[in-house]
Image 1 (cartoon, rainbow, N blue to C red):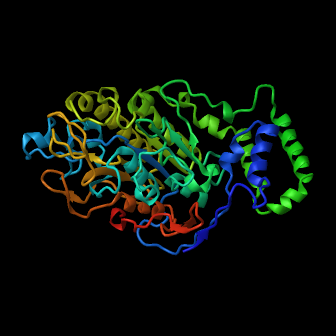
Image 2 (cartoon, one colour):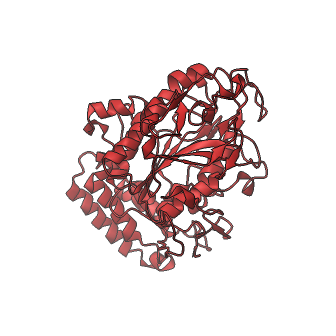
Image 3 (cartoon, helix red, strand yellow):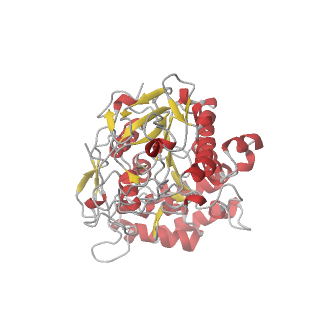
Length: 481
C-alpha cells in the first residue's frame, strides 16, 4: 500500500503556488484551460502488489451510469411467475444464451448476451438519506455519503468530497498519448437542484476533474477549447510556449518555493493535445457511417455511447456516460424515476434507447477487437421496488409505479477480462434480494480498479491530510474468466 500526498492551493505564507501560476499563465499567456485539466500533481506507479484473475486486463473504461434507478424487473431480471403487481406489464424473452432471459423491452441486448455478463445480485443497504444524490455519491466515489455529511447528503459538490473514480484512475494511470484523460458526457448527474455531486475530483483538486462535454452528441458539438484560436497558427502557438518559458525563467525564486510541480510536463501535454487535433477529431461523429449511427440510435444516449467508443479509441482512459435525464425527472421525458405509469415510458422511451445504444456499443467494441482491453460497466444507483404501488423511500407511488430499491438490482459488465454469456449472482423469486453472490456497488468499483491494474487499497490523502483507500472493498474476482 502506498500514499499519494496532497498539496494545498497556497503556501503557508499565503503566496501563490505553482498551481496558481499555471492558471494565471494558462489564461493570460495561452488562453487555455487545458493545462489545468491535464495536470498531474504527482505520478504514482503502483507495483503489482495484488494480482489474480483479471488483474491489469483493462486499459480503459466506459462507465455507463443509468442515473435515476432503472427498473431491473422490467429490463434485465424479469420474474414472469411472480404475482402481477410484481412481475409488471412486460413478458420475458429468451436471449442467445441458454438460461438467460430478459424483458421484452430489450430485444437487441437479448441477441448479444453471449458478449456480456449480467449481474443480478447488486445489493446494499443505504446509509443516510434514501435519495438519488446519496446513491450517486456511493456509486461513483466508493464512499457512503455519511462519511462526509451527517445528513447522508443532498448537498452541492464540495472540495471535501471523495473523488469520482475517473479522477482517481487518471491520476494513477494517465493516458500514454496526448488525449483527454477522462471525459464525462452528455450531462451532469443531477437530482433536483443538486448538480454533479460525485462528478468531480473532490479533494484531489480541479486539476483532475473530468473534461465535461455537457452537450447533446445527437446535434452539433462545439469543441472551441480544443482548437487553436482564430488566426493563431501552430507556429505562433509554439512561439507563445517559448514566451511562457521566458516568463518562467524570470520566476526562479517562486519556482524554488514550489519545486516539484513538473510545470513543463503538463503544459507540454496541453500543447501536444491541441497541436495533434486528436481530441477534436474524436468528437467528430460525422466521421462515422450513417448506418452505424442509426444502429446506436439517433438520440442523445445512443450517440453518447458512440462518442465514448471514439474517445476510448483515441486514447482517453475513462469515459463516463450519464443517462441524459435528471434522476427525479419526468418519466415521460426519458427519466427512469417511474413512480407512476411505468408501462409507456419503459416500453416506448427508456427501454428502446437503452437497448439500441448499449447493444450497439458492445457489438461495435467486439467487432473492433476492443473488448479485450476495454471494460464496460452499465449500472444505476439502485433498482426499483419489486412490488408496484408501495412506498419504500417516503415517495408517493401510483399502483403502476415502482419506488427506489437498493436491496437487489442488476448491472451489465463486459470486456477487460470479463467474459460474455454469463450470469453472476441470483435474485429471489421477486427480485427483491440476492440469493447468491451479492455484489456491493463499492465492490464493483474495486473490480474496476483491479481490472486496470490498480490496487483498490491504494491510499490517497483526503482534505484533512488523512490516508484513505481508493475504496475499502475487495474486487469481485468471480466476474473474470
